[in-house]
Image (cartoon, rainbow, N blue to C red; front, side):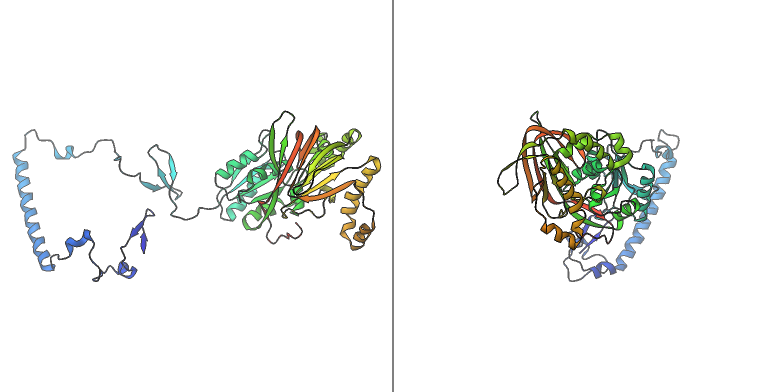
Length: 453
């Protein structure tokens, strides 16, 4: 057994039982340590008393002798004892002595190194107070209110003062999130649009650090698919400190550009190549800020008249190669869209797979079939037993083709626009997607229902 010293080092007791250490008794059945062997046959009490008397007599004689010598030396060149004893103004620290530790006014122990930098003192194994970081888009949120809320709830929960990071045009949130993770934060909150959530999730993939989504911005698609409270930001902030967590899949897409370069990005909701990406690229940014996701209708109106099918070659892992003329190919981790539309009713964020949707309508009637499948069949009829019976009797069309797998590889003859979680990502000649199961840990309110997610 060992006792802890003030420095956190373990002090060996050489087998001495704890009882003996507490009482101060020296065990008689243990061999004396070599450093203490000289005291094994020490003097008894009487001998010590005589020795003390002799020592006092010698001290008195020495004092009388020094007094006489001082008198004889008066007037000589001997230095004044009081003046000689005064120290100079420099306090020197021996080079071989460790810097001392003190506590400042706040009570936090600090250690100053030789270079003068402040270093944290060892906590002797104790875990410091947890700390959260907030990454937010200042255009999408009320920054002052949100920061005050996070600071207040963190203090109430006994957490350290949180860190705050703003996104910029050049940093959508992934770089500052990596900075927060390097600081050792225990949770990250993100507030912004779907693009901000995607960028932060990309940086946090595989870290195991919980991510809390504070709904804000235009679509909040991941928050909608997780069935989080969209109008209660305080509830999601509070969930960081007393909520539950859920491990969800995250998708990755490798894009091959026309210039020969490649780039890989993550997505948490869905990505696509073709018409859906063109609709997003043609959406008026100012209109999107004003009316939200409804602005995509404007993008669709701009894109549909020019929409032409294009040839794509694609393959799912474990399946044969396919070739088809399509309008768009989607690879999705979630299935729900704004306005209550259910693009992929069976999609799950925790099934370790991606859902693939291929749109290949033929003419105007083909688009009607697409709209019926998404807006009527998936979003309404499937909710009722009678509706599902009607669907079972309906003739199947191939305007929308669904599949599922660990990813998809596809290539086109000409570069086509690509979108990830509602943001345009330029054009690509080929796309290779994959899924990382349970790579992202998300925060949900305490007792939040996760069935069907």
